[in-house]
Image (cartoon, rainbow, N blue to C red; front, top):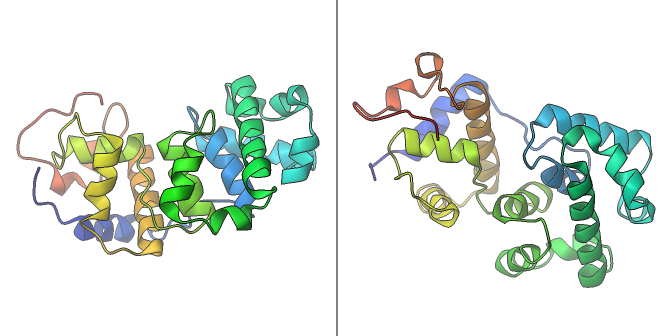
Amino acid sequence: MSNVNLLQIYQTLFEYFGHRHWWPGDTPFEICVGAILTQNTNWKNVKRAIQNLKDARVLSYQAMRDTPMEKLAELIRPSGYFNQKAKKLKAFLDFLSEEYRGSLSRMFRESTPILRKKLLTVKGIGPETADSILLYAGNHKIFVVDLYTYRVVTRHGWMPEETSYDELQEFFQSAIPDDLALYNDFHAQLVGVGAHFCRKTPRCEECPLKLFLPDSGSLEEA
């Protein structure tokens, strides 16, 4: 692992993109729903699904609980894998009901380690989704790792390709200040560079992080 200065990386991206104002969502509940819907798709598709839910007036805990599974699946069709995602949303709603009587504010009063452990027991919620819910909807200080993060870190040689989710998370949390706003915007900056430059086929010459590439090494698909 190289001795990369992650704050320098963040500043470089911030100067290029500006503040990212991520995660888009009007309410914590909308952000939780978006975190589930964004699995295996792009944000443009999630926005269409979210708008369908808003138009149907079911983007709330009780309204979504009352919506039949088939109707919910049809509303979120633009997000892809809509039948599976409808089941995941219903599983999250059941969890919220059973553990916190339907109250997100009660849920987010849990400590970060305990709530994260509980979220990971919900069918369809993995580490990235759980951490997105914690950070963006609940203002818990935890760094979100996604495919973009992995690509940026491993392609620049900051961590080896076999690095796990937890190791990547610790890589960031141990090297930058324990600051909610920084965790939020740094991950958003990595989403930005990943979406625009660090794609399956990287566009390194145009990327704001090109100066941080190793002198030698492969940029094969990650």
